[in-house]
Amino acid sequence: DEDLAAMRGAADGGADHYGGDDEQEEQFPGLGHGIGGGYNATAHAYQRQIVPSRPQTDIEMPYLMYKLVRVDGRAIERVDKHPFQMTRVHYNDKEKPEEVFVEISDGSCRWTQTGSEVRVLCLHVPTNLSVSDLDVLIEARRITICHAGNGTVYLDGDLERGVVPDESTWTYDEDGLWLYLRKMNLELLRKSNEHGEMWWPKLFVHHGGIAWDDFDKDYSDLPHEILARHRRIEAEREHQSQLDQAERNVREALTERDECRKRARQERLHELRTGSRKSWVYLNRENPNESEIGRYREEEAKRKSNQALIAT
Image (cartoon, rainbow, N blue to C red):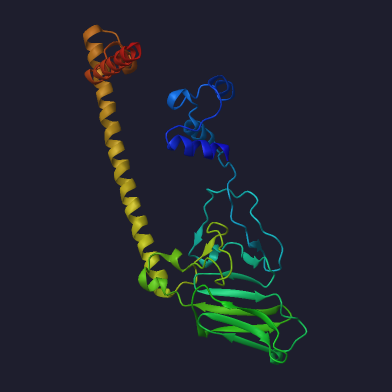
C-alpha cells in the first residue's frame, strides 16, 4: 500500500516520497532519487514487480487409459519400447503377428482390430445367461448390449468409426459375448493407397486414444482389389530396385576395370623408364596427380584462412 501511494505521489509531481535521503539510500541502495532529491518510488515499485519465475522442467504425459493384453487377459506390454520404436505392417496372413488386445481401464471390454474387422469381448456380461436374455443392438455408429429382462446395460457407446451392421454379428458362449464388426473403411474410398487411415485410434469416442506404435498392424484381410493393387505396386518397386542395383553393379565393375588398367599402365611406364618395378601405391605417393594436389592446396588455404580468422 505504501508503494502504491508513493507511485501516485510520484505521478502527481513527486511531492510524496519516503523520508530523508540517507534513510532511502540505506533501505534501497542504488535506486537513485526522485524530483528534488526525493526517493524515486516508481523505479522501486517497478523493480519489485519483476520477479523471475522458475522454468517448468516436468513434461506432462497423457494418462494411459488402456493396457495391452492377450485374448485371455495376460499382460503383453512391450517393456523395451521407446518413443522412436516403429511397428511392422503385415499384408501376408502367413506372417501375422501375435494377436494383441486393448483392454480398457474401466474393465468394460477387450478389443482388437485388423484391416477390415473389429472384434470386441464384452467383459461385464455374466457367463450364466442364455442367448435370449441378451439384447444386442449393432448400429452403424453405436453399440448397445443390455439384459433383455431387467435392462442392465453391459456395454454402450458411440463408435469412433462406422461399421456395416448387415455384415456384423455376435456370439455368446462359455468364452463370453463377442462382437464381430465389419469396418466401413470409407477412408479407402478417398485414399486407397494410404491404408493407415483406416486404423481405428480407439473403439468408442469417449475412450482415450491408443498410441500408433503400440503393436503391429494386420492388413492381410483388406478387400481383394486393394490387396491386389498393393501387391502390384510392391512388385513394380521391387523390380525397379533390382534393375537399379544391376545398373549400379555394372557401373562399379566398369569403373574398377578402368582403374585396374590405369594402375597397370602406370606401373609398366615406371618400369620402362627406370628399369625398376614399383607398386602403383608408392608411385601415387611419390607423384600425386593434379586432383590430389588441388585438394591439398584447398585444404591448406582453408587451414591458413581459419588461423587468420582466429588470430583476428
